[in-house]
Image 1: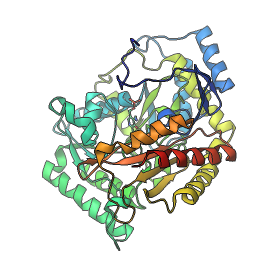
Image 2: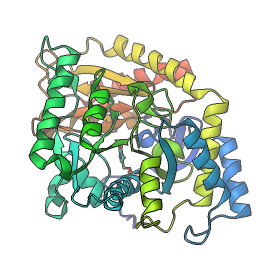
Image 3: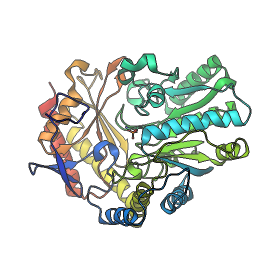
Image 4: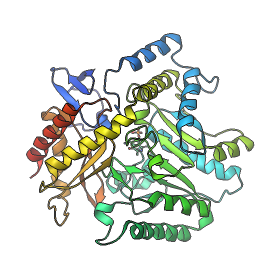
Length: 440
Ligand code: PMP
């Protein structure tokens, strides 16, 4: 019996022993093509020599120095690298160990900012239904995924949730993008009024929704409208780019494609690409300056803030992405993947929608394509696709949201940026077999 406390305690997990480009290899010698980067993490695949060398070098020089005593060179360099490329107004980076920690830090920075500027009454967070922002209690409370929240409801902070921008399900027939955006904007405005405009602290959203909906970008103009509303009411905008950031959608930050900036942006996953655990919260000058001018101390902290080896790994990852021009590659490969998915599944009776940006693509699986009726949640179709795919030597991510109070079935693809066209063919072929084997 395994003494590891795995997530699924009744499942048998193969033992991963090696990585080879976009492939993972188990102890039986089976090879798995990683079409989801684990959970949109492994953007450079599993054996990048430059990143490995950077890690070894850092460990040999100095693995770690606690951030309450020292800063360190990789942390400073990584912060400079990110801020030089970040959307306007962001000017400092708080490094943590993953996505949930990045969200927790963003929420606490937002709260402390309002204390520092003399608006202590601002405490409400508005996020969106069918969203995921992490599994620690603050992040889980922020998320609007009913299934993930349910067992822990009594422990969760009260947060407010509005509709996501989810055109496939929620845009009405004949409704223009502009009208749909206005409908969502007025829902948000109403909620702000109900809570009291001067009581609301932040609005939190993923520019492209990942884990709960499977790569759903907002319709054009949505985020600009959200930005305007937040500005008008003095509410901070927190963009969660833990999954969709760091090049995944074809630009370093997903917000760039929306033409907006944010007060706080969280990143993780692709930042260290799985070579080391790392996340970060990017903060605007306004927030940093308010805290600096006030108490001068952000009342938060973790043991591994700015971990030197993790920062060295992430810096190497980002330098590789830039020096090999991989963002351009993501855009080209992303189009190629979308075309192949449409060719293979465009008429599939159980594939309702094929969507996404860059190398962040999602399929929505439905019982009936015309009526968009989802599969019965009890069938666990997306879990079955994941299992069948593993049997085909393919990793894909079963994203799950809640549609009308029920679990939805989405398949998320987020492969490494280092693929070639033959990998795309292979992903689509193996996924096709897995979906055909799995649906009832
Ligand atoms: N935010 C988003 C958008 C995510 O997709 C995730 C992870 N799936 C998280 C936060 C939490 O990140 P982590 O699992 O690293 O804590």
